[in-house]
Image (cartoon, rainbow, N blue to C red; front, side, top):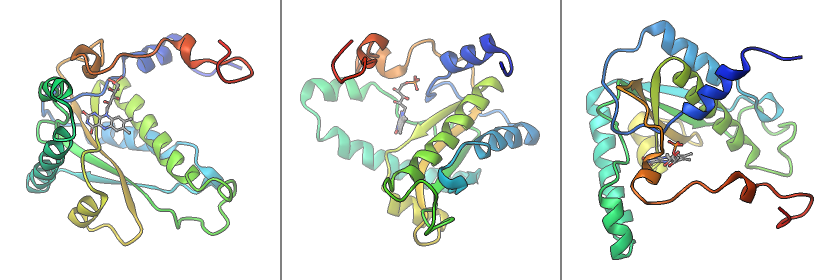
Length: 213
Ligand SMILES: Cc1cc2nc3c(=O)[nH]c(=O)nc-3n(C[C@H](O)[C@H](O)[C@H](O)COP(=O)(O)O)c2cc1C
């Protein structure tokens, strides 16, 4: 049984982009934001634990404080690079925290549904995988709605938890910049700037055993 429009689904998947520089800052209609968050909330989760929450951050002062912290982390990372990589990194924008309309911080609660989380007894990370699926649902729904998403991970969890008043044990998994964009680049920023290229699919697919292509 086929569900929904195949061509449109693949178009959204392949057009999705990580956005840093193309946010317009225009408002997001409340019902659009709700649809996007509802798509995230519809994700599969280990043992139906639904371990995610979404903190919608509009306040400019909070976003400014986060951006300051991200800039420090960017400098710290840059110091670990050799001269050639540092030069390429210098040209790469890694966030659009203030330019985006708002931020959505997606969190992980390992205690939700615990201790008997069905399917997590051998793989603790399955809870985190579930949160990442919610993020991907959000990303694809936003793309279909004409919005851009930019995942920011240049932060320490302790800083962001403190900034947002997260209860002890709740981990921030992603800060997502969200909002209308002027356009979506056809090629990932990191590829355009010569940081890394996508591997061909043939290299990623193995037949039966590792290394057999
Ligand atoms: C877990 C995760 C963390 C990421 N963190 C950042 C980040 O801190 N800053 C950034 O500019 N992009 C970040 N990205 C975006 C990636 O750089 C991007 O997905 C990748 O280069 C491929 O580009 P595309 O998403 O446009 O296809 C992150 C993506 C993921 C999945």
